[in-house]
Length: 215
Image (cartoon, rainbow, N blue to C red; front, top):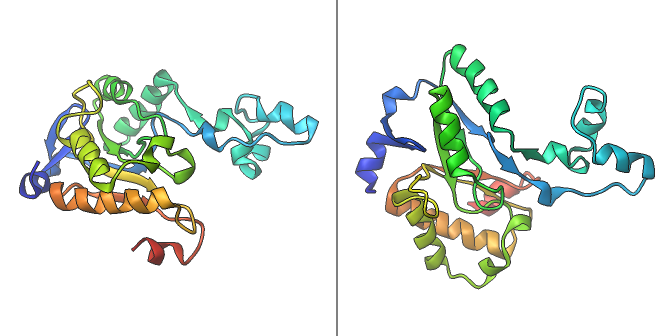
């Protein structure tokens, strides 16, 4: 995919569309994902029960203050529920959703394609790696060029053997300060963007200094 071509088209999980066909777009969403690597079980016995309970109106206030202490809160895996919610988005005038889940958030190309077909909502899928805490151990030994090759393949050929192509670089999660593998991924993302022209989504760490460090 050349820079010129990618600037005219947007890659969705069901193929390319013209930029003017996106309609109203949500540019940073998670339709299907699993961030359970963030889960930290509370030490207090009474809260342990809450941490393994399903999200409900009864425990919602506790979850707001303990986002990573509720396992169910860290998972979005229900395709039927996703279809219901995207149907509402479609009926409200929505046209496109950018799902920035990638490696580390259990990206699900086939699931996203099924949801897109069922709702007639365009879905753009992410590429690359999420935050360092979720990086696979083999990423430490990969070179920047190897990561570039891998991401370019996801964009131009498809993820795994699915043939379903990513259309955005990200969400590239960042800690503060940056971890070694995050620096490597950011470099690979920059090189991939130069090769493909595909847009980039970066999530800075929790510090005002984080964006400057990333740049």
